[in-house]
Image (cartoon, rainbow, N blue to C red):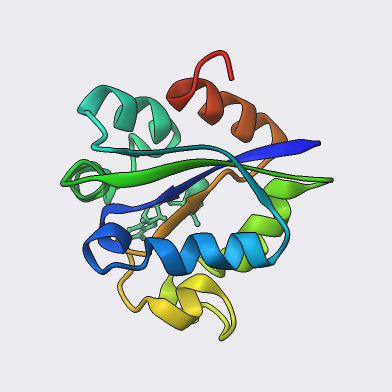
Amino acid sequence: MDRTLVICKPDAVERGLVGEIISRLERRNLTLVAAELRTLDADSAGRHYAEHADKPFYGDLVDFITRGPAMVLVVEGPEDTWKVVRTMMGATNPREAAPGTIRGDLGILFTENLIHGSDSLESAAREIDIFFPGL
Ligand code: IDP
Ligand code: MG
């Protein structure tokens, strides 16, 4: 089995879209193996988004991701789960995300794009260890 980290970001919690997002993952026949509603602190947000520390949008991103509870999930499927989830998420900029994707159907803002999903097998292992060490 193959696991990836998913975060329903604070905008998804605020807008009441966590159920919709989880429902889509479950209907795809992915399995939840961990789930926790958690307000990220600056330390875990910084570790999670370390690759973006030099980007102009980094400050806004950390402010956003820490502003309220997020639903942090570990999702499991048979193979290439991170890739399956990324395809379901759609493009990073919701205005460019295809209809049928989570961002393309539910989002319109850039930073507040509802969902995070690991972008490789290595990222998935690293990120799962930040939020659910030892899982
Ligand atoms: P991803 O979430 O699709 O993997 P990344 O490039 O890893 O996209 O960026 C992480 C997050 O940072 C995005 O989901 C989005 O919230 C935010 N972000 C990325 N690029 C921009 C930008 O150019 N402007 C504003 N926010 C951005
Ligand atoms: Mg990313």
